[in-house]
Image (cartoon, rainbow, N blue to C red; front, side, top):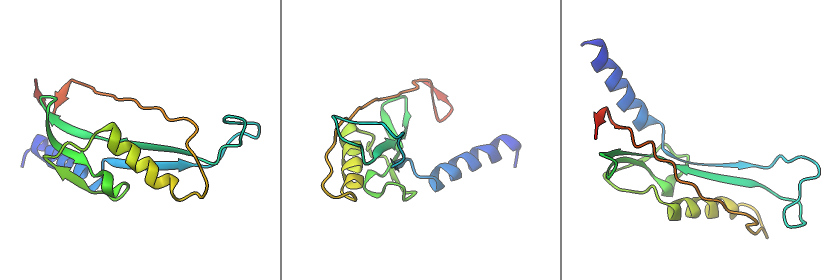
Length: 119
């Protein structure tokens, strides 16, 4: 097997091992931080990544129903703001009597290469 083929196989295998839908909770704040006059409880972030052919056809995307679970969805476009909001809501349910004070959305798209095929 040549070196380029081995690197390709390792890349594909590692993308299958490491899930693309993740959420993270941070509960450490500076002493005087306030949000709407109240002390914040946590900052929750959610990210979901996908690999698209030509920027439109979803090949591999993270599974938002199993965030942090190293699972993927094949040929299913799950990279949406709505799915990220659902992941955040599931994480917030872990805290009692909490409300969302500030929610920000962003979309990042490289638009360059799609699994080594230039579009």
